Length: 130
Length: 207
Picture 1 (spheres, chains in turn brown, yellow):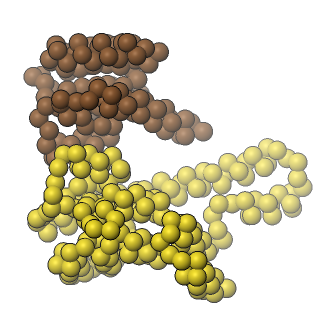
Picture 2 (cartoon, each protein chain N blue to C red):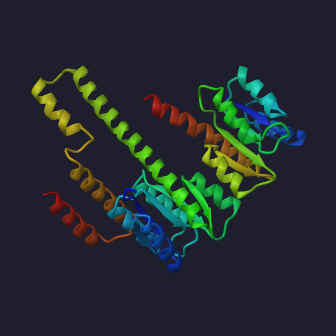
Picture 3 (cartoon, rainbow over the protein chains, first blue to last red):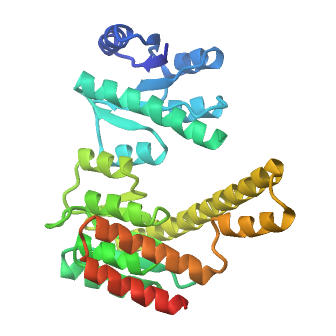
């Protein structure tokens, strides 16, 4: 079973994502701040991080960078934002974030993106392991 | 500054002329193309470090051009430019493998910095590709040795034949060019006759 970490300071979004992904056979961890997400990641491995961009303690991109620093494997990550800008989108994707999803989002599109991010990452890992 | 090779793809003559003049003064070898198909022909004929591609073009848009160029030359660093920026197209461009997404009107010195960063990225990408090719060659060699079913003399011949690295750099270039023109033929950008003429020319240069 694949594991997803959902990070958003809005309870409504966390609940929505939890309901959807847990009903599609994903194991879910949730955090409402960047620091709590890093605490979870220090003791748990996840297959994908789904994080809000704008959070009070740290932004989503900072969280992804820190999460990758503290992990051996480069965990795939997707940014979600209600305040999109071209600069932050380009910055996110330049930093190897898999996708940049704008709220309100289509849950199917987000689901596809999560699946793709996990599949591409395991594909890359197996290529390098060969 | 070393002579880096830059491809400018834009259907606006003014932009092509502006960028050609600016980067030529900075000792770049600049080739311009007014459309996606022309850009593909230019990539088949040359080895560029960086390509600047307009997003919105009439016959083939920038994303499609970018994807087709990637098939021809996977190491080339591609930068998309647009006068009609949106978050969606910036995400699509970057997810498709663009190195950067530049909004028009741009400051030339800022664009220059981006292009110079792209040149560095190109060097890194080429080095990685070269290392991967060498590793693959060594692995093949090792597997032949470990297999040990052939005599030493045969093994040496086999090694030379199976090495993915052609004997000299001229052969690499010819092989690369033939491969690119073949892809253009398959995708319908050139005719069979044009392909045969190109092939003849490339082979005559090798022989």
